[in-house]
Figure 1: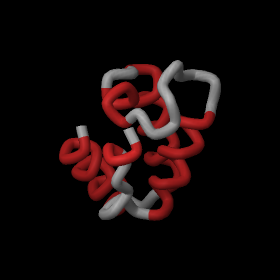
Figure 2: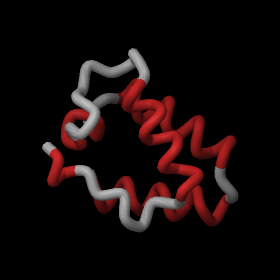
Figure 3: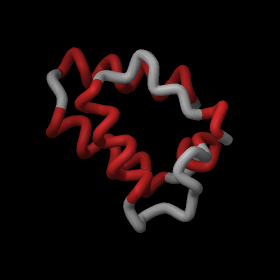
Figure 4: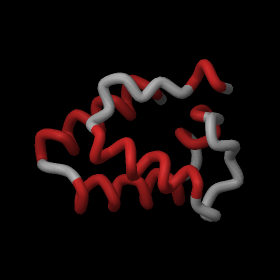
Amino acid sequence: SLSGLNLKGLPSCAKVCVLKSALGTITNCGLLDIECHCQDDKYLRLSARCIITSCSVDDAVDAEMWAHHTC
């Protein structure tokens, strides 16, 4: 749902990863279906891999906290 997608608090480096993974063909979830994404192991692994390589340690920790709060 549109109301489920809140990127506030997510570092910009991680936003790119989250959206890039959501737009990829690896998930059957709708772009804004955050509940579906939170349960999609393949999506979560791909996003996490991207965040680890794209973000600083502090931003990666912030992204993990955002994910725990969001999901």
